[in-house]
Every structure is written in C-alpha cells, then in structure tokens.
Amino acid sequence: MLVQALLIGLIAGWAWMDSRIFGDNMLGRPIVVAPLVGLVLGDFTTGVIVGGTLEIIFIGIVGVGATIPADVITGAVAGTVFAIVLGKGPEVAATLAVPISLFTVQLKNLAKVINSIWINKADKYAEEGNMTGIEWLHRGGYVVLFLSAFIPNFIVAYFGVSISETVTNVIPSWLTAGLTAGGGLLTAIGFAMIMQMILKKSLIPYFIGGFILSTYFGLTITGVTVLGVLLVIIMNQIKQEKEVSNGQSF
Amino acid sequence: MDNHSNENITRKDLMKVFWRSLRLLGSFNFERMQGLGYAFTMMPIIKKLYKTKEEQSAALKRHLEFFNTAPWLSTFIIGITVAMEEENAKNTDFDTKSITAVKVGLMGPVAAIGDSLFWGTIRLIAAGIGASLTIKGNPLGILLYALVFNIPHYICRYFGLFQGYKLGTKLLNKALESGIMQKVTFGASVVGLMSIGAMTASMVKFTTPLEIGQGEGVVKVQEVLNQIFPSLLPLLFTVLIYFLLRKNVKVTYLIVGTLLFGIAAKAIGFM
Picture 1 (cartoon, rainbow over the protein chains, first blue to last red):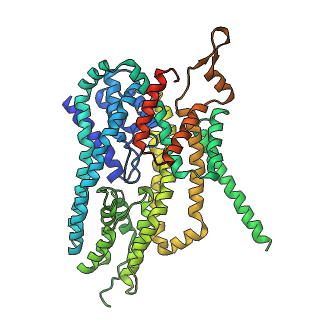
Picture 2: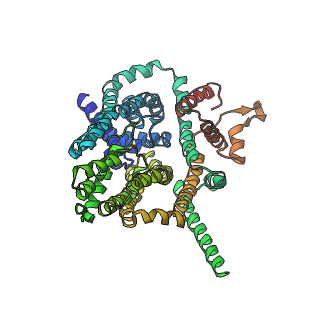
Picture 3: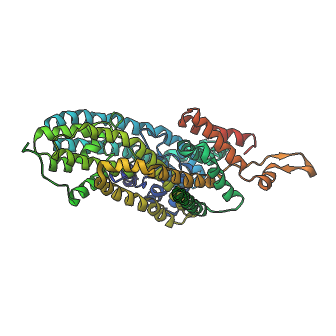
C-alpha cells in the first residue's frame, strides 16, 4: 500500500500544481484525478465513474480567487479510494468524500499563508536587483503548495482503506442514504455560485430558457449550449444591422 | 540620456513570457496573491530592457505589487505591460505609475471576463459533456473534457499576449470604446446561464416519494409534478441556495446544511 499511497500523493500533488505552475488547465478536477487514482488501485473503470459523479457534485467549486470552500482534489481521491475498496457505488463513496474535502481545505489555505514568507524576502531582493534570488523564492512557493496537496492525500490513501472499512461498518444505513440524498443536491450549490457571479435581472430568461429546453424538450447539455451560442450570434447580427440602419438614416 | 535601451522586444522574448505565465500562481499567497508570479513572468523582459541595477530594481518592485486575475486571460494584461516597459526603457518622459495603473485597472475586469467565460461557461460545458460520458464508464469523456476547456484556453492565452503587446496601451481605450468587453461578457453569460438552467434540470437530483391519500385514491406527488412541472424541486432548491448565497451565507455552511437537509428529508420520507 505504501507505493500506491505515494503514487496517489503524487497524483494529487500534480493535480494541484496544474492550476499553480502548469497554466490552470482544469486538469486538477475529479473527472481527471479519480480515473488516475483508479488506475493506481487497479480499477480504472470505477475511477472513471466516480470521477464523473464527483465532477457533477463539485461542479461549482473551483480554486478561483483567493479562497476555496472545499478541497476538491482530496475529495476526489478519498471518493475513489472508498468506492474501489468498499465497492458500495459511486454516490455513497462520493458523499463520504465531501466532509473530508471540507476538512483538508484548511491545509491549502495554510499553504497560502505560509507562502507570504517568500514575498517579503522578494522585496529585499528586488531592492538589490537580485533576479535569480526572486526566481528561487517563487519556486519555493511550488514546494509549499505541492506539499499541501501531497500530504493529506498520501495519508488518505495510506490509512483510508483500513479506516474506511471499519467506518462504513459503524455508519448506519439511514445516514449513508441521507448523505447520498444530500450529495445529489450539492450540485445546486455549484450552480448557485456561478449564478451569483454572472446572473443579472435582465439575464433571468436565459436561465429559465435553458431549464425549459432541458425539462420540456429533453435537449442534452451540448444541445442547449450549441443553441445558446447560435442565439448570441443571431442577437449580435440583429444588433449590428440595427446600428448600420441607424447610421444610414443620418 | 545615453543609457537608454535600444533593445526591441522580439517574438522570442514574448514566448519566454508565455511559458513563464503558466507559473503565475506558483507562489500564490494571501498577501499579494499573484504578485511574485507576475514579477517572475516579467523577468525576461526586465533583463533585456534594463541594464542598470537601479532600473531593474525599480521594475521588479513594480511587478511584485499585489496582482490577481483570471490566469487564462492574464497574458492580455502581461502583454500590455511588456509594451509599456519597452516604451519606458526608450522614453525618459514615461510615467511608470501608468504601468501599475493599467495593471490595477485591468485585473478586475479581466478577472470578471475570465471567470465568467472560462470558469462559469467553458469549464461548465466541458464538465457537463465530459461527465455525462464518464458517469457511464466511458473514459473518452476525460479527453473530451480536457479538450473542450483547453483549446479555447490556449488560443486566448497565446493571442491575448501578442494582441496585448501589439496594441499596448492603445488597446485599452479601443476595447473600452468598441464595447467588446461587454459583448464578450454578455455572450458568455447567456450561454453559461442557459447551460446552468439545463444542468439544474438534469443534474440536481431531487425527487420525492411522497404520497397523498390512501388506498385507491393515493396520489404520488412526483408523478403529478412530472406532468405539470418536471424538475420543479431541483429548480426551487437551486434558487433557494442562490438567495442564501446573496445573503452572504458561507459556502461551507451551505454544504453542511445541504447534507443535513438530505439526511432529514430522507428520514421523514420526503426524499
């Protein structure tokens, strides 16, 4: 298990660094992390399924801005470990992962506090015009951030298996059923967070429109998206034509 | 007057900046966020343009200041400041305060566009498409997810840098005048909200086994709902969370509260 736990720690570290030093390609997400963990544990397919399930649960929770409400990566790792070891279906495993992600997120915030040490030293180096020094301070940040993801996930992977077996025998079935029900609702928080950012009164019809296209017309998400893009293009054309005809009337 | 640089920024220099921009968040911290990363990204330019310690030191201090924006579009601001540094190295009258002013002035709007375009819209769509495949065990969804997000990402990151540099400060005025920023934000918001609407209907799992009446006259609430207003419960729940967020309820509380709600609703047979 030690080798597997180390590998899983490395996957989590890489996943976090994707958003820090590889350009934020959104690869540090459950949909990518869970299959990789599955691969290490010898059950790729379960990893793929758990990844999709967790991606939807955590859809609105991303490391944008300064603080993150939950540690999505550790959630994905823990969820996959539970699902494969316990074999109780992705939903149960995923929901057990949520409390862990709420807890370990504190480590990531701690790392962002610790990283302030580099910046104060960098001010001094800037005064001296010491560029190489500043470069190395920046790289010092990599180490702190990497460890903030590696450590908790190594622990989860190393001890998670033995603990989770006993834990799930102790947890009553009404609780897991309730957690699963609640987990299916967590997606709503993600959507609400995105809405809070982009929704304006004048844009409410588009939200309702998307909802209705899905419920009453049965369109898939891809279908609704394509329709949305076309709508924006058409609205732009109408607007431009208006501007042109207004121009001619002068 | 003679110590002014005649160095021109080349494509090669800009590519160095491009690669470094990927590591903008490498030392992210609460104090200055991407400040150290910004200075790190600008170093090839600073090295090339400024030959004295004093000039280099001044430039480094400028870019160590607080900075935070959407990483995928950050190169747009970086490109503009590269052009401004080049101008500053050639022109003694250049006011370096304007470089800081541009950074401070642009990081908010660019973050807003980047977050609504990349985080709110493109990633959401990528995740929706990808997860709908992987949930059925099809690993192609992973690849699709990565591509749907990253093709637009790298197009914007690359052209953002070169366009930003090419137009320099002119770009700022031009972009504001033509209203292109509002157009992009509006378009991204429309597509984003339509997908969220669709996903609320299909991904938030909320049905009720509740039954009213007894024996022959029993009415299954969910069946009635499905006929009149399918997915009403997911919609109501999402809107409720939205209003709670607007009332500044912390996300952590909402997560815990939602889990507790699930446990309670299951226990009384509402879910």
